[in-house]
Image (cartoon, rainbow, N blue to C red; front, side, top):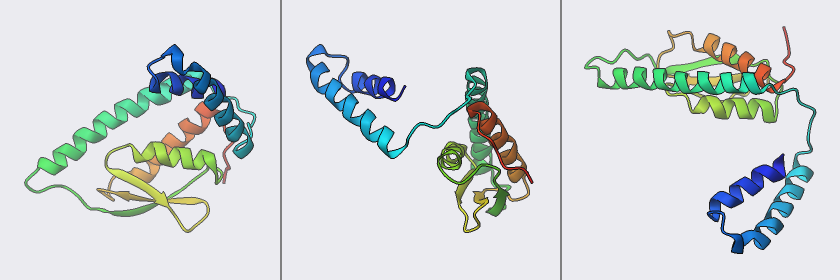
Length: 154
């Protein structure tokens, strides 16, 4: 799967020119080898349907949040109460939590940052009165379900 992804990126970068195939095959082989050495594959139970649902929710959430941010920015008296909130993460520390944080960074209006507490994320948001932590918890549960990741409970 990784080799296929690297090959796809190579084809995009070279516009699929056959003259670049020998170098591409070597680059894909090297990138795949390095990738597997640095991050060995882990068993996963990812669900394609759940991933598609996650993508749809992400796109819809981006649109709604973008409109909300624009509304606040264009308001003569913007309803903002910026600050930080803490979200207790159920994802284990590591690549899964990092991927979730990266995904949520793309949502307008909130920005998760690393917290000093191991099991939490510090989130900067435009309005601390909004249920941001609850929204993050829902999205984190969907993210974990879509990727087949076991989450910690309690």
